[in-house]
Length: 209
Image (cartoon, rainbow, N blue to C red):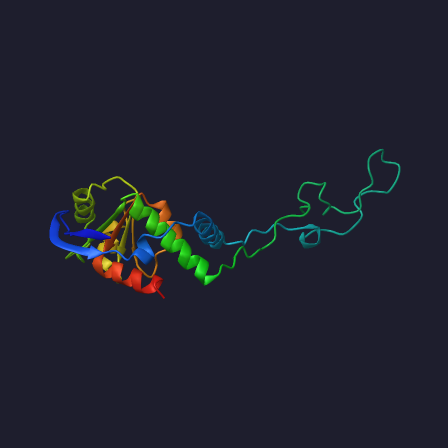
C-alpha cells in the first residue's frame, strides 16, 4: 500500500512510501487488541490502596464496659469495626494488578490496531520535522495544516525531540510519543495517527521481527 508523504504544512512532497502489508494490512484481531489494552490499563493502577483493620488500629485494649447488665450488646474493644474510629472489615490491601501477556499477542495487537487505522484512512505519514524553539502555536499550526486541530491525535516520532514534545504538552487532545513508546492503547484511543518517516521505519522493523 502506497501513501503520500506530507510536509509540515500538510502539502504533498511528491514522494510516496510503501506501508508493509504485514503490519498495516492484516486481518485485525479484536480479541488481541482487547487483551493488550486491558493489560495496559491494569498496569496504570498503582495498587497502593490500604485501610487499617482491627489489629492495626492504635487504641486501648481495655474492656470498655461490663459484659452484662447494660441492656446493649457486649463490647470488648474500642477498636471493633462497629465503633466509629474502629478498624475496617475486609478493607482494601496493597495489590499488584500487573497482567502477563505473550509477546506474540502484543505484536499481533499492535499490528491489528495499525491495520484498523490504515483501513479507516486515519493514518498520515509526514516527513521528519523539528521546531527551532518550543512553541505551542507552531504545533497547533502543524495540526491545523493536517486538519487535526481540536481532534484526538497521536503523533509518532522516530526519536525523542524535546522541542516538538514541549510544543505539544499543553494540548489536551494531542500526544507526541516515539515509536518505542507506542502502545496498542494509544493507537486505538487516537482518532488520527500521524507517523513521521523515521517512525514508520522503526515501527515496521520492530513488528516484523
